[in-house]
Image (cartoon, rainbow, N blue to C red; front, side, top):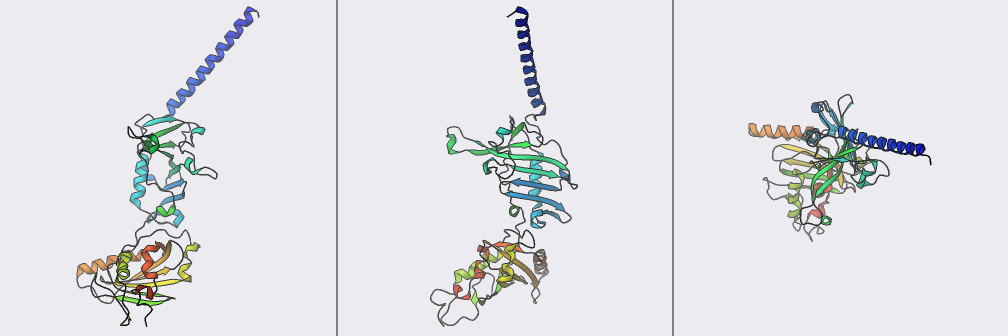
Length: 365
């Protein structure tokens, strides 16, 4: 090989090496320019008070929280109210996310850090939670994927035993080459619509009379004092009330909570209200009558409608009148609404009369 050609090859190789080094440094520099420094906010500054919609998409479903004229509601549940404090806390956490560590990634790393977004065929363990914040006109304010929880193993403990959740990997929109480790774990963040509805239901005072009617029959319990022993109307001399079952009515009636609400007027879970209703009329010592219509079905949560009205006898003090009116107003918020209540809260009202009697007396005539 002639000397001139050899020198040309050496020169060409040197040029290629320089170009490769330059491209590498350019890519590295580009990453360094785009990466958020440790201690800085990952999502930058965005107008927190302008957030009018929070869309969450994850392994357990999709939910959209929207701000309306009457406050925040769950779009997938017909705008049913959600807890504003909970929504506000989520938005504030997101606005304050700070980078503890920059984690360079490419598409092949997304699954290991659960930074892939919800789609058909993607394994659950590789799927993160996509959070999108938008303003009232639908314009995006911030978007981020919340990925795998970071676990810290105490010194001396084998990694396979497990550790403590100490952070989470996240990746903001437009940052496909950079993920970040943050201190917030978002351990209670859920994406099922039922998990975001306001669970509060009516809180009746202590009942003094309970009447239950269904296609299986009717039974009535009464008592003279709050917390006193129940008596069943129509008992024969050789029959006695099972007091343990009767007394469970107090905690069930006063502790009911909403598990879910219909996702629309065609929700099949509502059908038992028409097909097999149970009507519970409960008169309370604070002067309110509650009428619960329960749809008896096979599900863990049963459809319920509630109405309330004042009893004819007036409260004897101004304070008692105020308390009664507050309970009536609280019940009025559920007018024309159907909610689903866990079966265990409704169990005493689904019993036939015979099952409320002590063993051995129910069958006696």
